[in-house]
Length: 371
Ligand SMILES: Cc1cc2nc3c(=O)[nH]c(=O)nc-3n(C[C@H](O)[C@H](O)[C@H](O)COP(=O)(O)O)c2cc1C
Image (cartoon, rainbow, N blue to C red; front, side, top):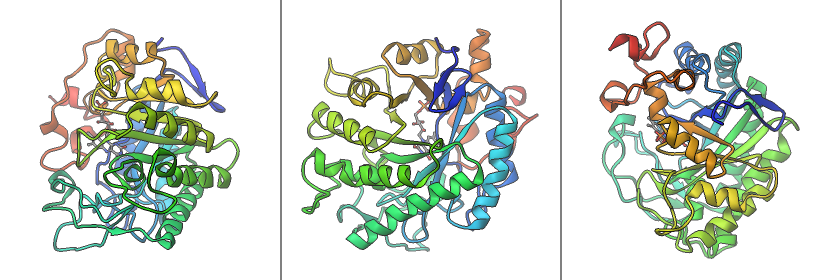
């Protein structure tokens, strides 16, 4: 099953295993992707991943950028730089989607020496410290509650970044609605305490993310893929659960899929266990249950063994993605198909002290040949 080919909209995928988005803070200061990043991404396509999702890419010059050295899709230079990455990945045989990200209150990598205002659905401070691996330190600022003008600007940012992604040659975009960033904060009754049309019950909380999906889907070419990533947990609250449990999941997945999402990419710490009480669905299973007709479900989280990966497909997901196990095994699909041994992921080799791409990750210098 893992190695059967399949389709996603008009794309043919060689197998069911894709690369999950991973922020690597390796772009230039002004947000351009680099030749090293082209080599880094192409390596996963060479290794058999049938589709790739990029790291989170910022979408506007107002409040979206979340890290120093994060790549953007805002300027003509950003488009040029990404087109080199896209061409390298296409040459290696895989489609690639840009993950469009607005950081919201979780502006991770801006050190205290560079104070930057943040916006979020409500003025609720994330309860955690910024990530040192992304260059941040100290606590997050209390965000400003986004005004309707801010929401218009952010929505337009997603739309223009998606058009820029199409121009750069990407096969589609994944809108980042997971992990505690801006769109994900709308789904949470803790982070979203608005009393306008975007706050309240699940129908209201999903309204803004669904508007973004629909605005993007309306603006891009017909064949261009538009997906959204969803989680319950957040970088700053790894235990976070939606107050209404599976009832909220039902509304969120139905509305996002009706808004025009070609795929829903769920992420949770362990996609093989229940996300809603002991005997409930995993988040991926809930997506399978509640998305409408032809919306594809991609599962992620703790699926780095072939057994776990297979179980996600048996639970109904169409596709799955790998993050940390892909770093350790950039040729995971090829290895797994040949029953070759897999290398265990070690944080220290890839993400410490910083999450930037290391020399040993570039082609002809792979972790397995290096260590
Ligand atoms: C270094 C690193 C960076 C990440 N950056 C992103 C990101 O930019 N966008 C996102 O949606 N998830 C991001 N994630 C989460 C992963 O996509 C994935 O959901 C998580 O690692 C669980 O999958 P795994 O068990 O296969 O590692 C990141 C994870 C890691 C390890």
